[in-house]
Image (cartoon, rainbow, N blue to C red; front, side, top):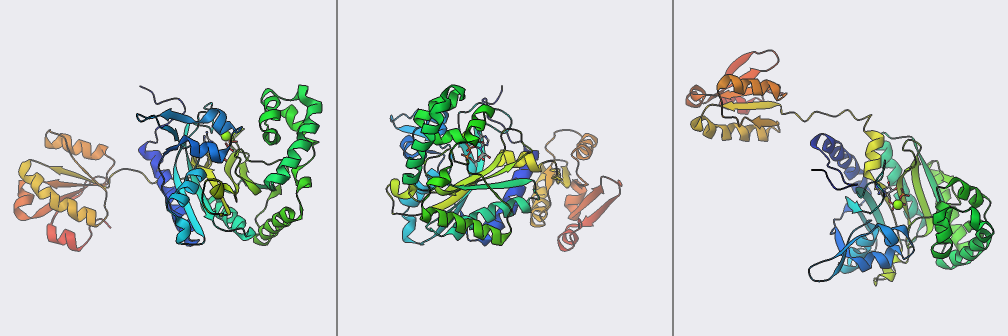
Amino acid sequence: MQPLRGTKDILPDENILWQYIRKIITPILSSSNYNEITTPIIENTELFQRSIGKGTDIINKEMYSFSDQGQRNITLRPEGTASIARAFISNKMYNFNSVNRLWYLGPMFRYERPQHGRQRQFHQLGIECIGSHNPIADVEVIRLATRILNKLEYKKYQLEINSIGKIEERAIYKNILVNYLQKYTNDLDKDSKVRIKTNPLRILDSKCHKTQEIIHYAPKLISCLKSESREYFDNVCELLNSLAIPYNINYNLVRGLDYYNDTAFEIKTQELGSQDTICGGGRYDSLIKQLGGPNTPSVGWAIGLERLIMLIKNEFTSTNNNPYVYLINQNLNTQKYMWTIMNILEEQNIKFELDLSITNFSKKLKKAYKSGAKKCIIIGENEVQTQTMTIKDLQSNDQNTIKLEMFIKTSHFN
Ligand code: ATP
Ligand code: MG
């Protein structure tokens, strides 16, 4: 039996790393007043069609959609922002705070060709700063992404940023770009030839070498931005400078989703091969209104956790998953006494493994050694009668019997 193509089990040893990431990010995000939100994994297909936009890869070919028993069109979420925007509107979150700072972590689903750094079920950590049109909000979210990477001790990343302006500015640019590209139609890659008609801006993002060369000499989107958009972008850059976050302006950076405007950014690495983006984000000022909510300018990003894990796992020295104590007992009577000992260990936060084998004492002891535990607690009839416990050190093989009350008072394992 194999898991579905493009999906993967996260086994207990790897989950230690996932728990570690949660432990690092939670205080960072909470300190800036970002609070965790959990939305359903399934949503109406229409939500994504209306937000991500027709002509995007996600909508055209990557959605896991089905109709349920009630003939509703349902989709496994391909990304987080649309769901958050929906939740913001459904729960009327605008009534409680003028700015809502939220974060989420969970699985996303896209029907893509599985390869290194690309799965069909993958996880994103994302944050959204909802309700502000101030450049410092853009820089607040970017700062948090870099802070998380720094805290995880990952340094080899590059921040790229661009402004994709407003819809009207992009519309003007689209014409200019299409005009330019039409001279080279024959030299473009297959996808880009189609995109000239469906979504020309995405051509800027093409990975094909020849197309990139053509794009290199193409007119730039920034030349179509009016003073308001330019000023916004300049302010974002100036705030980044003041924070000393290094960045490159990449005039060809566009995002694969339609709802973005003005600021667009990505955090990349050279250590992942062609799937080189760890984090993608930007500003989305019209999404919430477009979905039927109040006018609520917002900005956010998402980090692909599987990619992040590939980057940090070699440096991560895992604490092992073994129990500290192995608990051996003899029969039903000694088992009843075991609950008390388990309660004490729990109170002291000591990881234990209760022996479940139905076999003789020496075989049980062998299991204790095999478990990787440091200590073994042995409970026989004698221990029950005298209210004691026998502790065997599995490294030195020293053994001693102590009173239960002594064990409660003085933590014997510290
Ligand atoms: P890419 O160009 O790599 O496909 P994207 O623009 O589709 O990225 P976003 O929608 O911006 O990606 O998602 C944010 C992040 O989520 C990406 O930077 C990446 O780290 C991760 N991600 C996206 N798709 C996948 C996938 N299929 N498998 C694993 N991680 C993914
Ligand atoms: Mg993609």
